[in-house]
Image (cartoon, rainbow, N blue to C red; front, side, top):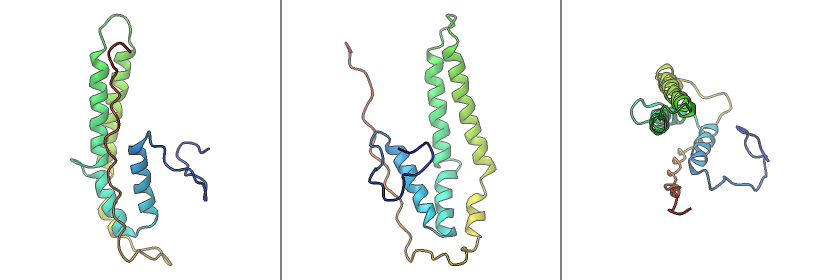
Length: 144
């Protein structure tokens, strides 16, 4: 068993958990970074950091949407959990956007780096992994 943020041990037969297809996609991107040269890594950084359509911007939108859903349950009935949860989620969205602003030139800076001595860049860039299919719906059935 691995801890959060640690890869599976070498030779391990454990694959990605099918319940987390988006995590598996990010793990595949991380593996692509480990085997790529600066220009390929710069292209991956651009996919993550693009201010409009990058992974970070879309993740910030995700947290905005979850904050809005939490606010919908804040009924001012003395239970502050929805209020504070909405605030935490909205703050996370703001932090992600700020992170994108700080790193907005990272792709260009990465592309300008020389390959490390002894590093062989793959002759052809590995294709980006395909996005996962939409996860199964988690809506509740009536009567459940």
